Every structure is written in C-alpha cells, then in structure tokens.
Length: 425
Picture 1 (cartoon, one colour):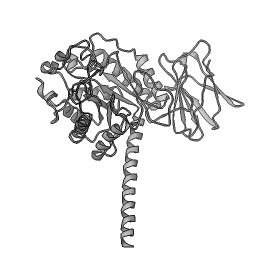
Picture 2 (tube, rainbow, N blue to C red):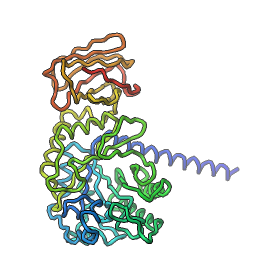
Picture 3 (cartoon, rainbow, N blue to C red):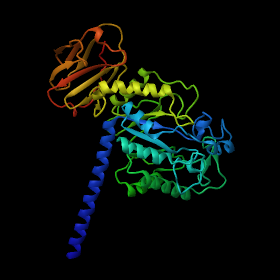
Picture 4 (spheres, rainbow, N blue to C red):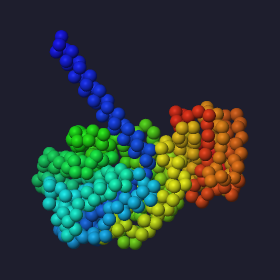
C-alpha cells in the first residue's frame, strides 16, 4: 500500500512538472505571437563574395574557395549594440541570427569544430556579443541553425545544393554532432526564445524530434520551428505570406531585398511592400521574420537601415493594431486584412478600388458601439441594416499605405469565428 501511495505521489509530481513545463512553453509561444515582428540575420564569410549563403558553395564559388573564405573574414565594423538598436528602432521584438548555415561554418566559439569564427582573423565570438547586446537592450534572441551540413563529412549529401551524395557518411554520428552544437548554443547563450532549424533533408520526424527533445532537456520552454524533420511548434512559409491560419502558429520568413545574404546593389523592397507584408502576416494570424544581410565589414546596408526605421516610425503610430492582436474576425482578402484585440477590430484597407469609401461587412453577432479613424481623422458614418453594417467616410481620410478603421464592439470579439468578407467597394 505504501508503495502504491509513493507511486501515485511520484506520478502526481511528474504530471504537475509536465503541466508547468508545457504551460511555460505556451506562455512563450503567446509572447512570441504577441510580438508579431522579428529580425532575421543571415551572415557569414560568404558576404565577402556577395553570393547566397550556403547555396553558392560549389555553384558560383568552387567548394575549396568557399571553405577558405573565413581566413579572410574580418568584419571590423561589426557592432552588436547597433544591430540590436536597429531592430528596436524598426519595432522588432526579437532577433534570430544564423549560428550555422548549410555551409557548416559556425559563428560562435564552439568546441565541436575548428571551422568557426574564432579561427578567422576576427577571432571574436559574435554570438556572445549579440547575446550580451540583446540582454542589455531587452531584446529576445534566437538562433537559426541548419539541420543539414554540406561541409560535415558525416552528413550524407554535400554541395552544390545538397545534390551530391557522399561515398561514406554516418548520419547517426552527425545527429550527435548537431545535438551537441545545439546544446552548446543553449548553454552558452541561453535562455533563448527560439531555435530555428532549416532544411532537414535526410532527417525524418523521429530523428528531428530527437533533436528537439535533446535541447528541451536544457531549456524546456524553448520554442522550435518545423524544420528539423519533426512538426515543432510553428510553421514557416518562406518568401511568401502565409494564408489565414489560427489553429497553429506560423511565421513568414522573408528577405527585405532579394537575397538572404548580402548582395551588392540588391533591390530593397519599398516601404509599402514591407509594411503590407507585416500587416498581411498579422491579418493571417502570423508573425513576420524579416531578413537583413550584413556586409562583410559587419555593417547593414544604409538603404535597409532606412527602410527598417521607416517601418518602426509607422509602428510607433499604429503598432497597437499589430502587436498583441490576432488575425480576424474577417479573413484576408485582396482589399486587405483585419486584426483584433479585446473588443476592438482593426480593418486594414491596403488596396482601394475606385469609388467612394464605403465598406459593407456582415454582422458578427456582436453589437458595434462605435467606429473611428485614427489620428482624429474625419468622422465615420456607421449604418446598421438587416444582417450587415455599412461604413462611410470621406475620401480624404484614405492613407497611401494602410487606412485603418477601428471598430469597437460591446463584448470581446476574440471568440468570433473568422468569416470571409469581400464586400468592399
């Protein structure tokens, strides 16, 4: 009987610990979803060439040349504090930095490989400096870590593009290497917000989950994306905005220019493109991880800096309609999106056709108490008809990038099931 009581007590303790751990992870996911906007940074010795990180190994650049670029890598103008400040100025709430891309080069002082930043002329642990700067400025930090490794002799495939199969390899041994690297990163620079893996290739769901389980021994609440081979905690549409999805978290990863790594004279997206990407991601109930590629000297392109600061200026005024919101209650359409928080709905009119500013939308089963434009704009006329509401306002109130209409409801709108809404004219 005593053994049974002891067994039950142990199970209750384990169950309680599991619930606390799960609750802690869910709290972190909620914080991340509320944050909505993060900075992705792709950087490494390849910036000396201005070609794509990882993928140009064995293509534009011969493998032997690519693998020795680190011997010239000396980014003397790298300043982690400036990077973090730029992210804050842009209105970003977290940073995800490339610890290791598919080329296998490690951007930290690792004991598991000599192919790392400490063997470059720079000889500084940029990840340590970035972690210190993030802590000092109150910025959440995570790391991108490639699941595949085309440089490592135990990984079954190599460059170019993982299309060449090695004669000999040992995937189990490589998996231990990947786990060891990941654990080292968490121990050295954690606690972290996220580990962001990429391109599992030879990894299946079981092997990928093994990596996730290993890092959660170190940090149980770490959130992980869906690119170890296992599902992880969130989806990652790439270079496109995800569709409406509120039953599983997601994050669009996209470049501010065309290439992930720095490219000379790369074409930077317009402010409208950048903001629409962020707004449409939030309207679909997702995040935006927006990528910059620093130059080989450690500085970020001035035009990219300007664009990010412009986004931050917009968010200083209208961030209340993005941060801590959820997508809906109207699903994204060509005209724009909606976000919501408590008893407020924010219509983001991103594309206006010709005609008077008149919007008709279906009733949601909640009383609408008021309807306003931000900045003390022109009055809004709200007309209630059977099953619909119509909003009318002056054409002068339209904004060039995003016209926000704030709708107040008598009760919380958070539990309303999202509906399609195309009637805008």
